[in-house]
Image 1 (tube, helix red, strand yellow):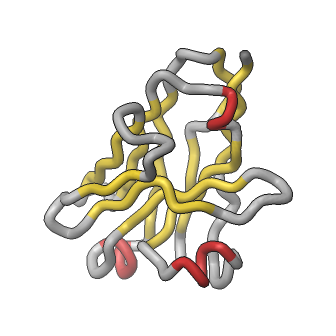
Image 2 (image 1 turned 135 degrees about the vertical axis):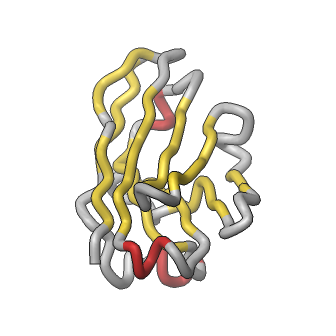
Image 3 (image 1 turned 90 degrees about the vertical axis):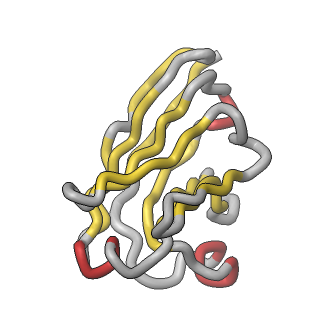
Length: 120
């Protein structure tokens, strides 16, 4: 299983980052995919998802600022993050779209994630 997220870093408020995640082909092809994030001491939250027909959904907190997309040929999931805010600071993870009980409890395999820090 491969869930290799990258692209995080330190950015000033108002800036942009693009996260990437290489996902095992067996997961990429047969599942809806999603980005999640977690702040230490808080539950992991679902922020964006994409279906196999490229239909997308976003949490209210990121709607209008973040865009999820995928490259089928490269089995890579992306998250374009614009107009970043300090409250976006978190570790970001990619995975298939999971029931809330699974992602809130961080059950199953998640990979290392990538840290995004937004300074004010």
